Amino acid sequence: MYLIALCDDETAELVKTEKLLRGYEKEHPGVDLVIEHFPDAEELLCMIREEGYVPDVIFMDIYMPDKQGNPTSFGMEAACRLRKLEFKGKLVFLTISREYALAAFDVEADQYLVKPVPEHKLFLLMDRLLAAVEEERKRYILLKIEGRLVRVSVNDIVSCEAQGKTQWLYLANGRQCLLRMSMAEIYGLLSHYPEFVRIGVAFIVNMNYIGSLNAKEIHMDNGKRIYLPRGAYKGLREQYFNYYCRENDADWM
Image 1 (cartoon, rainbow, N blue to C red):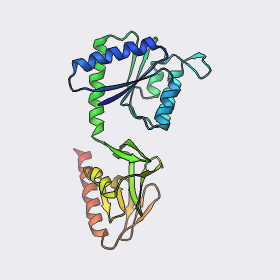
Image 2: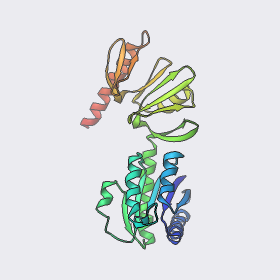
Image 3: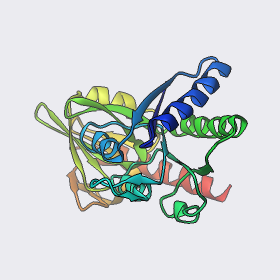
């Protein structure tokens, strides 16, 4: 299943784009597109910011009115705000002019298409986008954060800590998230990735974020210190050394 957001203030354009995407879905058995319409970019931004909505692909018009209804290039501003919200999904501009083609690079747009978009061109783009989404999903996990399911990149996870019956997730951007999952459930998801190691019953650590370690504690890159349980240092040191050497060997290949 793929979540697709269509953002355009023209209802007719939303309908046209969905029709093209449904044609793609029909020609690709097994592809399930869940398509949402957003005639207002502010509504899309709110859904992502407040509701945890994380579409795999956003198709965004550039020429849309601002909050006051004035005709502007609000789609470009909305795209900038999306990236500030750390939206890392695919972003495609569908618009009537090439005027903002260069500016699209600044917001890391995946494609810039001028309307009307030929079916074959959109189909080729969808092939590429969905293949990239599938590859990236190998590095994402679903976690229950503050009462809702959220897709999190394993690259962004620094550590996880159990505090009594509460689990806290620490992310690279400094965010701390309350998890409604047990440490066993969390480690069950993260143990498939070689960079994660469990330390005692209270911690899971991403070794990519270890600044240094000694027999008593780990110093994480985010400034956090994790005190090691008795007897944990030797096994951790061996795991860290093996992981570090493996990563360096891969860099030289």
